[in-house]
Amino acid sequence: MSQYTTDVHAERVGQLGLITLNRPKALNALSLAMVRELNHVLQAWQDDAQVIAVLVRGSHKEGPFGAFCAGGDIRYFHQAALSGDVTLEDFFTEEYSLNHLIQNYTKPYIALMDGIVMGGGMGISQGAALRVVTERTKMAMPETHIGLFPDVGGGFFLSRCHGPTCPDHMGEYLALTGYVLRGGESLHVGLADVCVDATALPAMWDALCRQDWVSGEAMVAWWRQHSKVATEHALAVSPTWQSAPIDAVFGLPSVAAIEQALQGADEWSLHTLKALQHQSPLMLCVTLEQIRRGRRMTLADDLRMERDLVRHCFQTDHLSRRGVRSETVEGIRALAVDKDHAPKWQPACISDVTSEMVLPFFESPWPAAAHPLRHLS
View 1 (cartoon, rainbow, N blue to C red):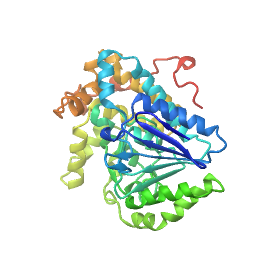
View 2 (view 1 turned 90 degrees about the horizontal axis):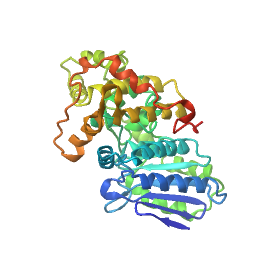
View 3 (view 1 turned 45 degrees about the vertical axis):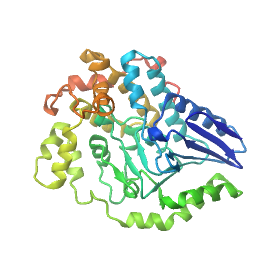
View 4 (view 1 turned 180 degrees about the vertical axis):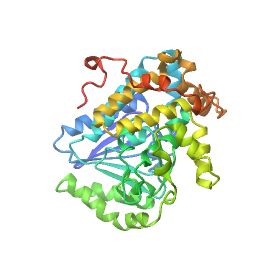
């Protein structure tokens, strides 16, 4: 059984449900149609007794693998916000529902996170039973670059980063700076499970389709066994942040305090401070609050909080800012539309952000009984 849409290829091969994101020119950035197709296919396969496991991969201009998913389609966000397109609301509601479905999927769901894995790509992979990376993986939640926040459950999975060499406040560091984890670095922070050589992926994919599996769990065990050596090698490489004072800095109570602590002359402080000073000061403060709250939440509650946040990002009524005047639309304009890389943030300085600007982002615009994600549990 094979099912094609323009940008999603879903087929059942034997006992396996296979999904290829097929929008390579856009680095497989998720459109509303793609989100709906993924929701539809995964719901159908969850109820199909003949499907024992699901695998998802991206595609590259030159073929399968090489770019998993660069996130949501931010050009669409920009156009929809300016035109008043109501499907923008549907996009986030349905995307977050998809993230919740994957996290709670009743069958093994395996994400092959080769190449770029950012934003929405993290949302469709972090809930997987097995998260596979390669030496080509570039993983990040860079939403503060565009005046947004790390959504798709970022408040949940970033706040739970863990590992023997992982700082307690790694989530705050990744969320605020948008730092790109390369290759096996993601193993050190608990955002990936195994690592394989990228050149081996096509043969491994084909081998899976030729075998009869006792269960989906047996296939997961096969992946772990065949990736053991590469995973051990990746974990043996010390991460670049090992000597950085991440906890001492990103465990501080406010973004202003973090900025102050980065005034040193060492290379890490200078580089990190430069990263923060390019982001939206307002959304940095919102993001820090999001990660701290998310650490105490279930995934469902975190996604409901993020649904509230994203509505306020495009309709920032407590600051009388909508459309072109919102931080998010301005950030997308500067990065992806005009490409001048010179966003005009309001306020322009971290020190000018007040709690009165930040806390209303966390007030839901809907009563609980009418929340668009009230069905998540």
